[in-house]
Image (cartoon, rainbow, N blue to C red):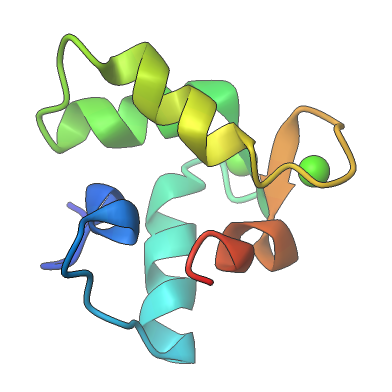
Length: 84
Ligand SMILES: [Ca+2]
Ligand SMILES: [Ca+2]
């Protein structure tokens, strides 16, 4: 279960600014296989768990804009840039 802020809270208009620990906790929750990287599949699952439906692909696409080195996964450093 994703915490009270959740994945989609990353880009809501009045987003809550997460601290390092909260960000790490969210990352770990999305990274279900625990390899330290968030794949597109894990992202999709994460959004799905939060009830994103029709716009699932859009949400994933938006999140993947943080994939700075274009390896198809988000590491923690890339993930945190979503908050800036
Ligand atoms: Ca993973
Ligand atoms: Ca990457």
